[in-house]
Length: 250
Image (tube, rainbow, N blue to C red; front, side, top):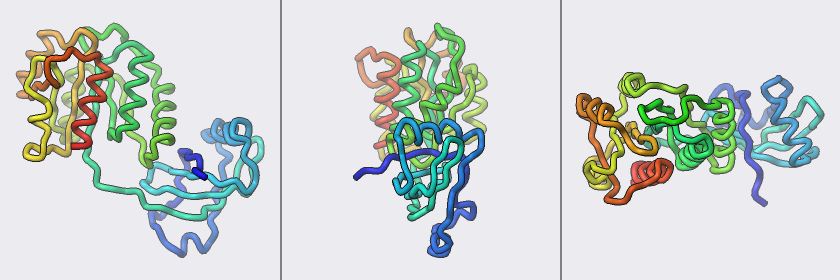
């Protein structure tokens, strides 16, 4: 039977080791802090777990833990760690810089980008952004839920809203190569291939209506490649999934 997966904020394997000695001590994870209240409520009242039930936990360390409930009360839980799996890998470092669009559509972007394996998401306040704010707490919950569902062991970073200029400063600061999606640009697939493979990538995708001339001029001053997926006019959220899929899986 497939076990349910859950993200816990408490670090389980504090020595960052996968060793028999760690398991020989039959480590017990105890959760009772305020940050675990919602998770404990979910376990007890939504999933109705009982003593003896098994789950999979991950703590943003790159490890995954099979655990069994020792106790589950209204405000605290105790789980024994049964097995540790090292899920760390050398994936590409790809970030999405997405212009803010309508609330539900942007939430969908965050969910799908997380499922695809993106390393980080930066909301961009572009010239044509109709919406100017986001519920970051809700977006963080979506990131956690999408990570639990998709099997991720490390959450993507969700940054606060930035202007286009701030976003370029940030991406340069973490050594990313910027590319821009724009229907009139060069073919995306020809640039993102084995010959031109880039593992540290910042993908900028505009809002409904596309980038303005001012923004396109800004990209040109930064010598940023402007790429497209062909002649089709894609919605912003469709462009996100298409571009990320090519960049991540090629």
